[in-house]
Image (cartoon, rainbow, N blue to C red):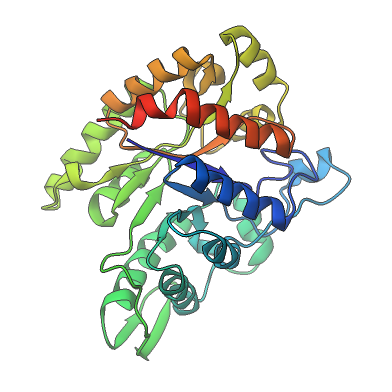
Length: 337
């Protein structure tokens, strides 16, 4: 099973306090991740501050654009892969420019890019950027995914869709990877359907193990109905992590984090189907053995990649320390065959 780290490109005020990290800090996280043997880093995508964050913090958070950020990370690393968790496609109206940015980054990084795509957890963000544009964001993702596939593969590309239009586009170079991985993010059935039909993988967030197993079975069945082998699709759930000396100490620290507040905020959107199970029971919060046991349970349920693990800390030194503890005490038990 692959293990990767969440990169705080757009997490201030959401998952971390304001301020949290500088551009150099973000590069340092990536270099640290490569040194510790993590598979990749995954940054999220926000353009403007959410309403509840404005109410909580007097100072606006810094949201770094992930694709540009990865240009700097690619130059500072050699083997580390980089992914978007997720790139919010509906906020990026010019699909040709988006495809060009992705292809360019894949070339310059030596083929180390992976792209997770989602509708975005906060519709208010979409409406702030495009106040007069009416759209079904899920349909935009479906159409945008097809457009990216076309632009990455065809010499001359033309598309006349509901949300995206372009004509006779010769977009070169293509991505360096023969098939650049495109993952579909989201916990609901529509996200699973998208991944089964046209994705290289599925990226849910904070899914309880038994629910993950059910969803993986659904993913494989739907993939088969489209003539695809579901076992070839990555199942890459995202989880929160806090590693403590005891389970009780870890839970106490977790509940003091900005990350915990963020999970509560997502209970009305991304995590609304989670039910009554406590966040600390779903996520990787506890002593090393507890986290190893839960990680192996998730692996048995079908997870192939614990993607973009988000450490529930409030300072950069804590983040780097948690990354190292996890890499040393937990990761070897989950990545071995």
